[in-house]
Length: 192
Image (cartoon, rainbow, N blue to C red; front, side):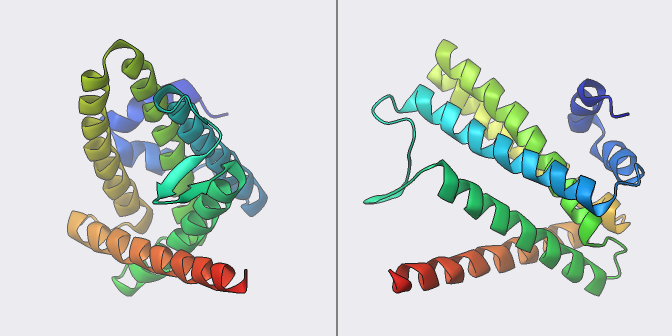
């Protein structure tokens, strides 16, 4: 059984131990995919809840760029694809650097990271009702904390014991994911 509260509170303090615990649960692929699907849904919910607090005009769309808005389903698909590709790329790239993490391990880590981002985003949104400046400062702290957690968890998933290898793995994996999603988006945009 997972003690969600304890693991959530322990993650900022000791992300490597939390990663080790999660990876040691022996989750099967269907369970990992379920965890991943829930984490994607929570990410989308957090984006749109925070959007409601910031954008009262139309809270059911997110402005992505000039003249480009997205509803919940396209955002969910984008997060789903980016995270899947990033987990796959990070597992392969990490193995090129001598890491031991497989796709399942990286997907568990990324799903947990999305859970933590959901928690952090909800805290930041609550702070925005008190003070926008405080919420902005919290967002900066959350960004740095999330990066630190991600590096530590990828380090544990691959067994690197080297933050530099983890950072390179994350940067390259995220780049592959971003390029892949961009390519797919261009293909879909060209087909319309």
